[in-house]
Image 1 (cartoon, rainbow, N blue to C red):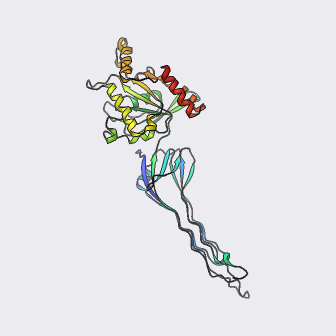
Image 2: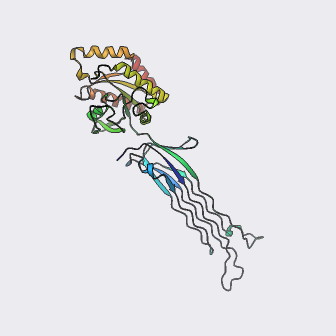
Length: 355
């Protein structure tokens, strides 16, 4: 199934049915009085978060969603039937915003969450409601109220604990294959990954976390180079980012330090909040380096990159260092779940100072 992470839809709630102005007419019962019923409620439109869905492809082509109108009231105290509501199933992690104002309407962050997108109109009142001691034959009734109408933007932000960040061919897909059961495409050319991939990393029988792999970034992504930086939205909910760097690129003209700085700059251009998230440096493909020179090359890179946070040297291909990294991530996530967000940030800053 094709991965679609944004769509625009229009929702039209149903109109309420009109009230009825009717009078009781039966043999031997003169002046039976008003008996006009109310109109039925128009159908409303709801969004429902469903963990069994992982794309917005259903809304790329089906953009108009209309609920039925309520039935009008009738005589003999008959009320009109209310219309059925429409429930739109969407992936967990979908953010719904008003297309015109940009205001967030709903953030579907948990499975089964239900949010009303457009309220159906209330039914009109029949003349039954207007009778009184001074008005025994009311002829007035009210029309049904119109339903709400909105144009909405849907934006999917995948839910994951850890996000992978890096240049194309930095080894992100190989890493997620190494530590989880996910099997994203791996090849020897750039932009192999064209859509986000999720993998569950099991550290123990009852200890696991979700990791997200997004398409690689290149310098100038903010201006549309490569695949652009629109996939960075999928890192917005991550607790920690892993910045993967290819320490031994095949291209002799490639500069790992320059590329790493370019990634950080693109992150800052996209969103300051994302730039401020806890970020660990993962130096990948150390298996290509001489064992004797490996430590020296890694140290030189860290000094030139001017990095003061946590650092892990791994080989995603051979698995060297991957287990140590996953255990460190699991420990960090468990600590962050127990502590308030401010305390986690202070703890992360303390770790960086110690390193």
